[in-house]
Each structure stands twice: as C-alpha cells, then as structure tokens.
Image 1 (cartoon, rainbow, N blue to C red):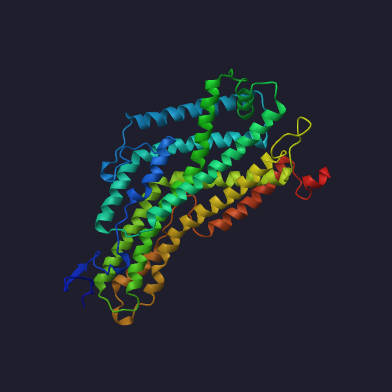
Image 2 (cartoon, rainbow, N blue to C red):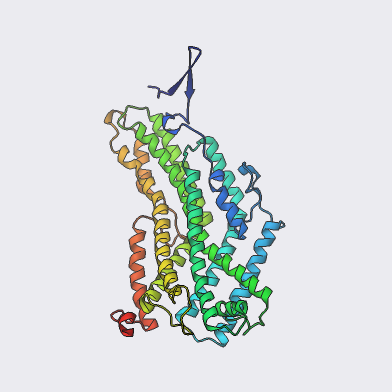
Length: 441
C-alpha cells in the first residue's frame, strides 16, 4: 500500500492543477509554509552576542549559513580576546588582589569573586563555541536539506525571548546602579560624583590602582559585559532548545498523522530515520554547548541562593539616610527594590530555562505512546526497533554530562536551594526565625 500524498488544488481560469507536495515520504499538510532554518532562527541572538564579544564568527549577518567562518585573525576575534584580557586583569586580578590583601572574607566579597570569574569564563567558553559553530551550523544545514523544518513561530519565539530577557536584565542592572548613585549622592557630597560612584562599585580602584576617569569607564563597560554574559547564556540555551524541540515535535506530528492507520513498514523506517537524525542532532549540539549549560545552571543556582539570603537577612526596609532631611527619591528603598526584583527575575529566568530545555526530553519520549497503539496487522520489526530505541536512550541536553535537563530538574533545583540557603544563613549568621523588621521595631 502506497502512502498517499496531499494534493493542493489551485483554480485559475477554470483549470484545476493538482500540485503534489512530498516531504521526505510522508504527508506534508501539517507543514505548509516557509522553511525555517537554524541559522535564520538564531541569527539575531548571535549578532547581539557579538556586540558584547560573544561567539565571534564571520558571516552571522548572511542569510546563508555556508558563509559562516571562524578565524582568529579577524576584528571580531581580536575584540573578544581583548575583552577576555581586560576582564581578567581589571576585574578578576585587581579584585582578588584587594580581596587577599585588604578585605576579610564575607558572603558579599565571595559573591563578587564568583560573579566576575564565572562571567569571564562564559566569554572564554563562547570563544571556544565559535571555533565549532560554523561546522555545527553546516551539519544542521545538511540535515535541513534532507528533512526541512516547517515552524512559522520558531524565529519569532526565539527573537522575542532574547529581547524580553535582555530588557528585563537591563532593568535589573539599572536598579543595581541606582542604589550606588543614590548612596554616593547622599553620603559623599564632598567628593567628585563619578569618582565616588566608581570607587564605591569597584573598591579596588584608588586602593590597588590609582583612580582615572578612563579606567572608571573601562571598568563600567566590562562590568556591563559581565552582566550581559550572565543573562545571554540563558538566552542562548533557550533559543537552541526551541529549535531542537521543534525538530522532535515535527517527527511527533508525522507519527500522529498516521496514528491507527495501516501503513507499510517502509514508512516506519523513514520516520525512525527522521527521529535518529533529530536525536543525533541533540547529542551533537550538546557536545558543543554543554559547558555553557553547566555554568548557566550553576550561576542561576548560586545567585538565587545569594539574593534570597539578602532578602531574608535585610528584609524589605530602607537604608538609613546620611543627611537630614532625607532627599532621596525612593527614601532608601533602592537596594531593597533591587534585591526583590533580582530574586523574582532570577527565579523566573531559571525556571524558564529549565522548563524549555526539558521539553527536548519530553518530546523525545512522546512517540512511544503512539507506537504502543500500532495495529497488530502492521506491527513489524521497524516499530519494535523504534520502541526499543526510545526506551534505550535518554535524549536531553546535559551540563557536561553531570546532569540531564529533564522536567524534574526544577524540583531538584528547588530542593538544592532550600538546602544551601540554610547553610548560607548559618554561615552569614542569619536567624530565620527572627525578622529584621521586628528587630528594628
């Protein structure tokens, strides 16, 4: 029995012209429309990342992924390497010098070390990804030639997710800077405003190294890059997860279209081969971006614990004024607003990354329920191999093989946060039963 194709009927001057559309041997009625490519989906995300020295590949602006190239001797790569050197010297080394010579260990100082070190590492990891990115995109393009992807919403979902998360991250950065601006204006009116702002936010300047306005501007730019990198890692994982999930869901739609029907074993072999391509692609992508997934989840876990600790330790209260009358716009609630917003944003962003990335594993398991309902007359060795393949392998993104991103990871992260929050509270001397607000009353 041959598998029927879908016939489109177009009427023009009373002449009926049947147009057959064949998509890799199966019905194409679910996939009408323009093809979606991986390069077109992630194009905007890659270009935005390159503005901040991430993924410095050539050809990101091109519509054809075959023009993607990586070369160390380009302006983009030089910009990335220069950024890494500046982040290492002006953020990590100078802060560690002050940390080991002047500061005493505290949760806040340890947090700064982690923030600069991890986000510098992210810049390095994206440079490593850039060396493999053209080859990965060429591999995906070959798969798209064999098995095109039809998902009209994929590009829009990726671009909207990228823009929204980065806008919310920019608002978080503004709230963090606003606290320092208000504090310097209110408590250090005798010093130059910009110098006071820089030395407050970056205390190793004018202590380890003499203050200079250009040094202040450079350090601010590097700090903003680190903040961007922190959020961009999540955006990157989300966009790639969208594509891989859409690949698997297209296979699921093919299976759903023939559910309960009598079809030849050759068709099951074709669909199983499509499934093999999708799962092989997941593994190939995971080999390239596994390090970014690991540091993304680790970063989110650490900073959620930190911001929650600040909220529990300090409560929602205003910082005392340095002058009377109090002329501050938000009456000292700048830092409280920042910590509350940052905590909510971190939790939502972490859940979004976890749930979207876990859909890859969920989509990879979905075909088995339809395969169980294959009618006995057409049950064949191809169906049996398909079932055994789904049960025999775990298709999911991983963090350097330390963990697999499945739906249950959200509960695992929540349990880990509770555990480590109690440890941090003991380390910082915070009593969970006593509220800071009640102590001030």
